[in-house]
Amino acid sequence: MASSFLLFLLIFLSVSSFILLSESQKTSKPNRFVLQLQKDPKTKLYVTNIYKRTPSQKVPFVVDLNGRLLWVTCEKSYRSSTYRAPRCHSTQCSRADSHYCHICSTRDGPGCHNNTCGVISMNPVTGLTAMSELAQDVLSIQSTQGSNPGPMVRVPQFLFTCAPSLLLQRGLPSTVQGVVGLGHSLISLPTQLTSHFWSAGFAPVFALCLAPNGVMFFGDSPYYMLPNVDITRPLSYTPLIIGPQGEYYMEVKSIKINDKEVPIDTALLSINKQGIGGTKLSTINPYTILHHSIFKGVTQFFSKELSAIPQVKPVAPFGVCFNSKSFKNSRVGPGVPNIDLVLHDKHVMWRIYGANSIVEAAPGVSCLAFVDGGMENNGASIIIGAYQMENNLVQFDKARSRLGFSSSLLFYKTSCNNFNFTAIP
Picture (cartoon, rainbow, N blue to C red):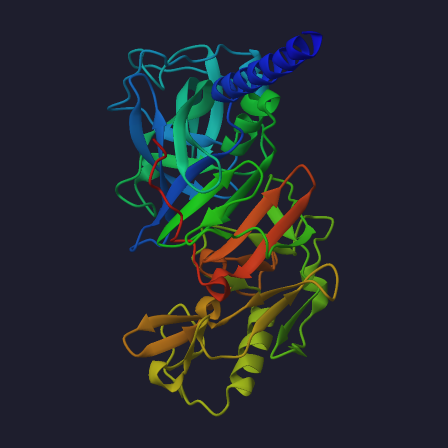
């Protein structure tokens, strides 16, 4: 009898534990999120839809990797029962690094209240800035287990700014209502997600997988693309450097083409005491921008390695172009010399294949997809543009201060277009 009772007790405890574990998993907060990215064909900027307000409404935003915050225009059609504008000198103002009391002369409404926090919002394409009202409202984002979207999850008091519509007038797609910043800031989207979901084990990590129909992940890996490919497996890592304005940099030691080192002024590759130089990553610049002396060295060396292929008249903004029919195709794009960014260690390289180094700039004309940034030393010497990141997984791991990069996913018979956005029932 005793043995039968013990067996029953063990079974009961096992079943109870399973039920409790199942229930806790159902009610626990998710620790990964996903947003779909779409490339605007005219501006070549990346756009994502984020659900905000009460009742919830889908709002399109340009994605700015180095942006400090999320801003949206509120002047005409912002309606929400959960909108709040924090008062001057509040905790929210401190988080936003606001030391200015906003005053508005027109009637009260979203973006226009007195004695609220004033924060600068910026159009990242034109550089135009405007004083904006700090606000908070509900933001909803889709959870994921890494391979499909799951239920929507709410962040009830998400901080953002209500900006004047003049910031939308130039450089941005006509469909968007604002910009979402992913930079190293207390009120950027990744930081606020980390703050809100920290107790659920949410890691301060996000990743970009750029493509015409790409994807952005928040939270740690793994991430999967069809057909069931874990795209984090090929990641290599280099230290992630945070710039003075919260921008993301990495250390490039040298550049190789066809496994041969390009002669360039390596002093330009370091960030000096004034914050000038180095290599920054950007989703706002469509193509990689090189300081003039680096651009000259890279284009001349690349052309020498392709001397058997005749050049054609360049198409702006590029400096070296070829007849598209001259190239043989491969799994990773046109068959051209590889370009390697040699990073903190000589054995760690971000390899750029033809799919990311050559772009068809006009019918029948393919160009080296790098742009001359001029001689002025007033910023980064190299700005890695969105085209060079397409179909590469780029992971920003702020917990470990490292940048992960996969090189081309085309090698693995998948791409950044292949996330399965079919929701799990």
